[in-house]
Image (cartoon, rainbow, N blue to C red):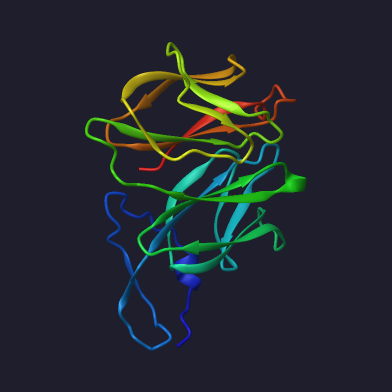
Amino acid sequence: MKTNLKNFSTTKIILSLLAIALTITACKKDFNNDPIEAAGIGFVHASPGTGALDFILDNQKINSFTYTKDLGYYAAYPGTRLVGVAKKDSLKYLTTAQATLKEGSFYSVFVVDTLKSTKLLILEDDLKAPETDKAKVRFVNLSPGSAPFDLAIAGTDAPLFTAKAFKEFTTFSNIAPNDSYTFQLKQSGTVKVSLPAVKIEKGKIYTIWAKGLSSKTDSTGVGLSVMTNK
């Protein structure tokens, strides 16, 4: 049986991040109508200097995003999915990738690099709860052409994460919560940029990512962004 995905792929469904309770009934190859547990997929615009983009899943537009923005997770059928990105309201892909989605798992799709070299970075998100009284963070370097960055916290001796080149990323690590962290991007011990007054809450999960171009000093220059995964 052919499954109609039109309404599914154009309607935003924010999944519960405590547990995936959403199930999707679809006809399998054996015509069994058993429910399928959805995967969660989120999209992040991390391409400096690029205008609004449409994110597309299996040739259906999901939503439009501007630079540094994300709109949470969407429900997706598990299996191999075609993920793509296009300029807003364009019918021509800038780039595509195959994403293999597992039932009950979460993924973040970052559109990275500059407009002429657009790529997709697809990461699986570990949303298991942090240790007791902790939060979890990971670091992703999405600054095109940058030398490797360390991510540090002001006032501490050792960086949280070290030597991540463009498109490299860490696993999620436990961290103590704090109402006002100042995160720093460092190269060879030198602070390149700081992001002050970041609240990291107990029990939550975050992605901190390096953005922008080292050659720019405007809104597309090197900086840090924080995304709450859960």
